[in-house]
Amino acid sequence: MANLEINTTQNVNLDYKIASVGERILAILIDLSLFSLYLYIVNFITGAVGNSLSDSWTVFGLYQLLLLPIFFYSLYMHILFNGRTIGKMVLKIKVVPATGGAIHWSQYLILWMLRLVDIWLFFASVGILTILFTEKRQRLGDLAAATVVISTKRKVAIHHTLLEDISEAYQPTFSVVTNLTDKDVRLIKETYLAAVASRDFKTLNALRVKVEEVLGVSSPLYDKQFIDTVLKDYNHYTQHM
Image 1 (tube, rainbow, N blue to C red):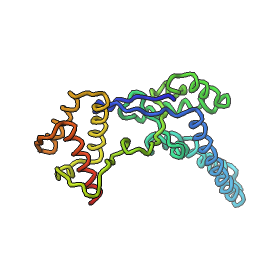
Image 2 (image 1 turned 90 degrees about the horizontal axis):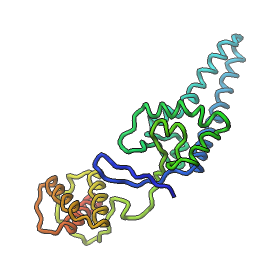
Image 3 (image 1 turned 90 degrees about the vertical axis):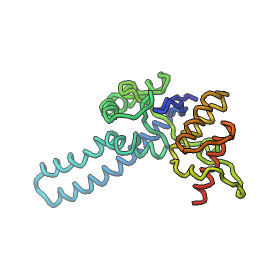
Image 4 (image 1 turned 120 degrees about the horizontal axis):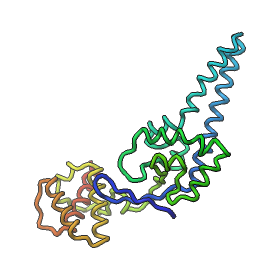
């Protein structure tokens, strides 16, 4: 199973499963099935217009105009839906930068331009072969744009979410945790779990100091107990709002 490690802007390493060639082919097939449905509608419309007009050039121009959404499909879908087409949404995969950070629209443009070579020429053999024989399963477009396609599927495990295992009788300690956002808490939990797993007490202490500073509190609890309490308090308050 190929994985991609991405370093976020907060210097937290996140691991993602790289999408398989099968997932990418299925996503394309789903998109192609939508194209077929769209083309059926376009042919119906232009046929109806052709029956009412004697000007074949007008019908031809209309037909070409209605094909533009298919021609630019992957480009505008990736830009509008954060690296996903409808097929990718169904398969829960998306395009991301290979090195982390925010993706730029020009990278989507490169991907779109090289689809001609990767997918539409030689029955997609170029794209499939480069995916199979590159470490990060990248087609030529991915290599040129410095992108990779990852799986966004989530395993339903409590340590992979913001949830904490707390009882109904739980009594929170820090009411100010409600000032945090889900993004803040997710970052705290990811850093906390990574530090505990690697026994990185220096990072754990630095995290504790930062959280105390943000919340404006001071606690006698040990670092691990403090962060664990903050996470549980946040869950308690958000679940009872």
